[in-house]
Image: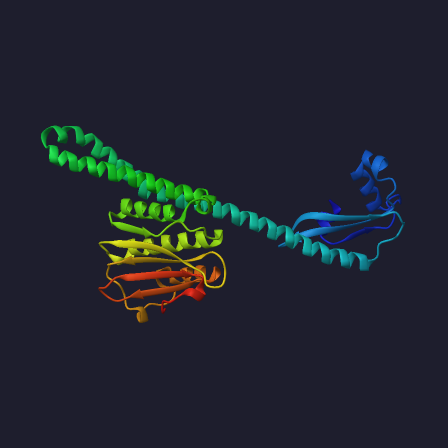
Length: 312
């Protein structure tokens, strides 16, 4: 308690002596002193202070009487200051992880509400109307049945997409073509925008490349939904043999027939372009974005970068 109150290092030259600090030390140790600490003769305590608040203490002992000096205290205090900063950084890191986890759960909850819940609600209403409609107007009932199938397929696709967010290893274990079709179905369910997927096979890609390509396709589709006002979109993925090494490269493109934009008037930060460029650079891929007002937008990612034939 004395150490915490004084807020600076305390040195006890002889813990068996008659000084007030020596007596306080023995009283604090109690029976443990005779059982475990009887060999100790000199002791030094350093308070751990963070933002003017004592959060703990560092204790050092020695077998020799009158061993510790002010130089020892200064050195221990410097170490203690570093230690308390490390402890605080670790605490803040854990706090940030907890906050990130909470924010991610909140985001997933919003996505679940905005996509799956509303889709299933629409499917439920459609299913309620379908029997009566089928009896009176068979053609309209058939259309309603088709819509019900579309809604349930879309809800399933949305759920699979959310499960990917909860289990990132699925991005690596699944085939890239299946992931793209899943994204397309979820997009169509959410926005009613037809999204066509064209692939020429299932390539085996490095994990980090597959994850990045998935995220880029996801970001491009989100941009289409938010900004393009498109009537149709196409995701294409083509593989090609590499020239100087085994394996294949891949070209991924996402095209829409929406409003487009003037590229010279768009900053690098707009539409998430900065994030897309950072992701492509991280896997040494090439990113090309082509767009004109009224003529839609085409996003092309080529991995590896050296095989890109597109002009940015």
